Length: 399
Image (cartoon, rainbow, N blue to C red; front, side, top):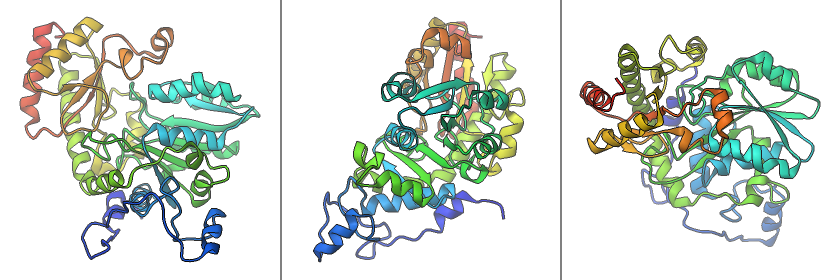
C-alpha cells in the first residue's frame, strides 16, 4: 500500500481534557504520583503512561511526537526545543569516544560545525564526503564507523541523497542511517526508504510561521527510549526540551502542512522553470537539469512536489546582496535566514547559514559567493511574483 503521510496525521484523533477539539496543554513542569513506588518505577523506565518531569516528556509533547511519528511512519518520536536540540543528542546517543561517522559534506552549517569542531573534543571523528556518490561513501566507512548522516535535500546546495542506496550500505556494515528531512517534509519519507532515524527542524516548514523553534527525532521505540533514559539518555541529560505551549502550537500548524507544502512546491517549481529559462544558473530538484532529479522522483510522495527550496547564482556577492535588498524593498520577501515561512525568505548561505564552513571547503563543494538560497512562500499570484523578481534582477544586473 502506498504510504500516505498526511492521511496518517489526519487519522489521529485527540480530544481535550474537557472535550475540546484541541488537546489540553499540560502547563506543568512536574507531575504528581499517587504512590511512591510508581515514581521509582518511572525513574527506572517501567511505568508507561506516567509523567515524571517535563524535561523527560509531557502530554503535549507526546501528542506532537505521535503526530510526527505518524507522518514519518516510525514507531515513535521525541520532540526537542530546536533542530540542533534533536540533531546533537542523536549523534551523541549513537557515537562515543573512538567512534567515527560518515557525513554529507553539504549539510546545515550548525551541524557541520558540531561534527567538525565540537565532537572531536569527545574523540568522535567525521569523514565528510559527497553523499551522492555511494562508492565514495562506502570507501569512507571503517571499523570504527557507527553512522551515516545526511540530509534528504542538502542545505544549501540542494543535493539529493539516495536514501535507499545509503540504507543498503548502512545495513551491510551494521550502521545507523540518520537523515535530516527538514527541507522535504511529506515530499520524502526517509524511514519508508530504509532510514533508521529521521530528524526535522520543526522551526521550518512543519511549524510554518517562523514564531518558534523546535526539533524532532523519529525512530523506533528502543532508540527513542534510549535517548530519554534518565541514566544515560542524551536528550534527557543534555536538556534540549520543548515547552508544552510551543508543542501545542506546532501541532495545530501541522494540520495545514499538506496544503502548505503543495503550494510551496508549486510556486518553487514555477519560479525555477522561469529562472532557468532566463539563463540563470538555477538549482531545484524538480528541474530535469538537476543531477539527482531522477532519484528524487523515484523517492518522492508525488502529490507534494519537489519542495519549496531553490537556489540561483547571481554571479557575485555584491549582485546577490543588491538583488536581495531590492526584493525586500519591493515586498517580495525578507532577507532572512531560516525557511518554511508563508513569505519568501532569501539569504546568501556562504556568508550566513553556511558561514561555519571554511572558505576553501565552500569552494570545493561548489558554494559560490553569488549563491542565493530561496525558501519560496505561499504567494497566490506566483506569476506576478516572478514578473517583479525578473524586474529586480534586470535592475541590479543579474540578468
